[in-house]
Image (cartoon, rainbow, N blue to C red; front, side):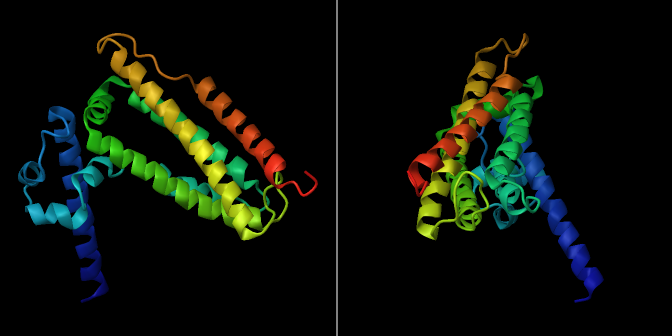
Length: 229
């Protein structure tokens, strides 16, 4: 196989994946997640059922495809930060930007179907919780390396076991706070008149919450791991 033919094959695969994803997410918004089958998606996208599964292992994965950049980017905020940058502040800064975008997007009228589908499906809610848990674990690994090396100004360099405990606490504080804001925002969106004003969690609420979480994380580090404490 030549490089050119291999490139064409990869482009076709990417195009098929995108078409299946877009078709599925349109159907989910129109009919509700539980009412749509993989066979429905395949028929509407004009592909075989196995083709859908070749790209997406579950219907839940298909629903969230392209909608959860925070899974990768939360980790990248820590591992890809500029040299000398505080890892926890880098995480907080990224999450603030991402959360504001998510809250504003989910409050838009055209995205009500997405919020309604999530609210109506226990399997989607379970999948979203799993994504948050997986992100927490991956962020923990990234923070552990930074904190063990003494790269967080709130904590001295420490052994990997202690750094792991502190990192898990910090990661989950941020992610649980973010999830609470998202869930409350969705409650407000669904409670509002579909044709009227759509309240959402304020930008200031998000910034204030995450700033306070970072302050608490620093205080926790001092209380638990200060050698003089």
